[in-house]
Structure formats: C-alpha cells, structure tokens
Length: 307
Image (cartoon, rainbow, N blue to C red; front, side, top):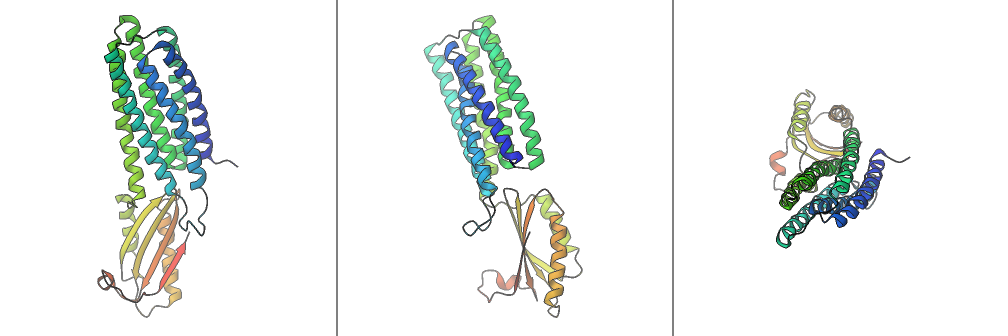
C-alpha cells in the first residue's frame, strides 16, 4: 500500500508537470518575463517533487546492517537540495528580469496569458491545501518543504497575474520586470528556512526546547533514581533519538533498574506519539559525570532499548 507521503509527491509531480507545460508554452509565446519565470520555477518544482519521491521511498526503509539508525536524514538532505534549487531558480529569474530591462522586451498574448495564470493559480492553491493537510498528518519534513515551495508559487502566480493585468491595460513593460524581480527575491528568501532546517537536522540539532524541558521534568520527577546526566537528543525523519545516563543506588538489582528505565521510556515516548523513538539509557551505580568528561574510563554497564 502506498504511503500518504509517497502519494503526495506523486500528486505534486503530476501537477508540476502540467503547470510547467502550460506556463512554458505561454511564456515563450507572450515574451512575458514574469510568466517565463513562473514556468522555470514550475520546471524545477517537477524535478524537486520527483526527487522527493525517491527521498521518501528511501527514508521509509528500515534500519539495516549498513544504516543502523535508518535513512531518516535523507529527508533533511532533500530539504537542503530543494532549498538550493529554489535559490538558483530565484537567481535565474532575477537575471531574466534584468535582461528584459536591458534589451527592452515586449509582452504579447496578454488575454490568453491571464487565463492561463488564473487556471494555474486555482490548481496551485488546491495542491498547497492538499500538501499542508498531508504534512500535518505525517509531520514529514519533505512534504512540509514541498508545501512551502508551492505556497511561494501561489504568491508568485498572484504577482504574475497582477503584472499581466498591469501590462495589458498600461502597456508599461516595467511592471512585468519589477514583478519578475520581486518574485525572484521572494523565492530566494523562502528557500532560506528550508536550507537552515535541513542543515540543522544533518548536524544533529537537539529537539526543541519545550520537548527537552518535558524530558527533563520526567527524569527529575523519578524518585527511583538519584540523578541523571548527559541527556542528548536529536531527530532524523520520523524518529526522535534520546540518550541519557541514570544514576541508581549501587545496591539496586539490574532487573529493578531495567523496569524503572522502561517506565521512564514509556513516559518520554508519550510526549509525541506521532514520532518513533529510539531511547538509549545508560545505568550508573554512582554519579560518574565528572569522571567521564574528557577521561577514558572502563565502560560501565549499558542497557540499550530500541522502540
């Protein structure tokens, strides 16, 4: 059965292909830099959506002997690549606007162009609504990036439509040039968040402050442990990773310590049931936090639990 994430990328790829064909034909016919800019953006959308399909397909594969922690970071990599492509497309659109200003290009077929952009706008808004719904249900970084990408297309399509109307009634090509340049700057700006979020995941950024505070509160409220330290978190794809050292009384049995650890894990996993969790708990018979910092000591007992 095909997943919601894969279905979303197939839908977005199909829509991007349709929009690319429509805009490219009209853009070349009319000579409008704004429409041509939008066509280039849709072409990139098509390639990005196809890439996202393969990224999600691979990220959904389970952990194996070569990728012990799974392939969740492929989603972050896809987000970085998509943001980079968006930035490049924005720079190209800016070049097109400057080129038209210098060479004095003239737009044609204004009425047909406006009809095409209205149809394009309706299709894109419908796609964004669908992608946002899927992103909310799956919490998938790739789908979120795709939704944001097409959301920028909605604004750019509106800007192009306004530009076409302005040029149609005033014959002032400067409107087309200004709108085209404005779209390019907006596209570049929108790509920044995608690249930043993807890079932070690739660099193993910790979970958000609220989640870390909640985990700390769970640990601090456990009367069965003396202390805890070395709490570390990260995320990749749909998996949250958490590592922590728990300090027990040295006389506690291994079985009791393990049962307490299991209860703590259950409470942590309940913080976000939409995510999978991999929780590694290190059991300490005493507080070794000072000893272990920068030192090479015999490794104490570890209990590794994977969920």
